[in-house]
Length: 346
Image (cartoon, rainbow, N blue to C red; front, side, top):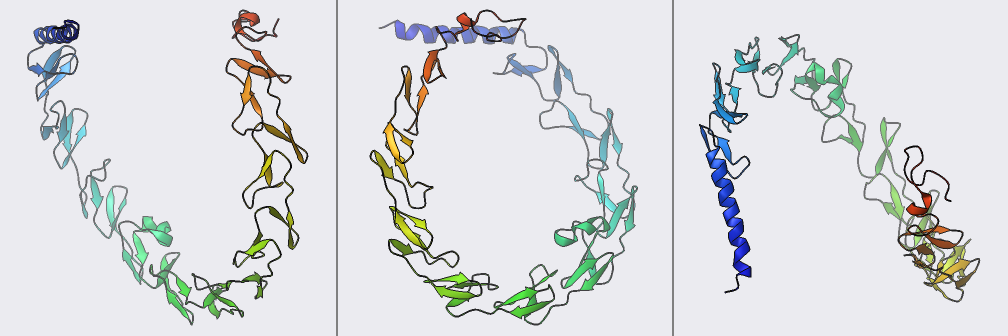
């Protein structure tokens, strides 16, 4: 048997056994063994105080929590210092865990005012709520919201006037126009005039041009596709785009001149529409070979260079930060307690 493979596991197990025995020997009364340091935990109903386990003192109307190391007050009581005091619930209120500060909440239709629950004045065409959302959230403190078909205005609810060819929205606090109409001055639903070769969009309140036409003012005009271009059938804009290898110039497409050692970019790329090959750099309308200095490499773009690690760029060269004039040794000790390099190099 190869002792090399059995010795260390046995030694580790022995160390754990010795640690467990030491922890067990130091375990106080009312505790039990545990894999967590210090190797023991207090029993349920006891709390660790230093190296001892002391019984948790339960005040009246309290019970141990799930861990058994502290206590919580029974329902109807709340903790005040080291005791459980009864919660005083005012008229028209009920016990609630949602209000940690008081332990109670007002009943539906009542509002908390200085510790008392006062009946909420609900105006006509409204109803009491516990929480108000949407446009009426400013009235949340008043505890009411308007009925469906009414809108809040100050402290009352006014009926929503729905114009011809309009309808109430799902929330009931506003109106919208039917498909084919649009809101005019927020008072009426005006018919939407759709030009020839146009149709209603998905919203139903605007129009777009048919394929092959584009929007020009209030009309749909046929798209004139110039040579070396193709139709995009977009309602807005010219409605066409130049082919690959061409760029837009006025109402037409001009060929992109790609110099030697370069390649075309994707359609819609920024001017000039081409990029130099890896190892070349753009100069005007040409690509010239990239000169990479000693201790440098071509960067991710392929059209420039970066210094290698432990080198820094200066005047088109890469100087060592380990042995060169900018190394920590060359810079010398810190000046006036500062960091190395807080002075000009020697």
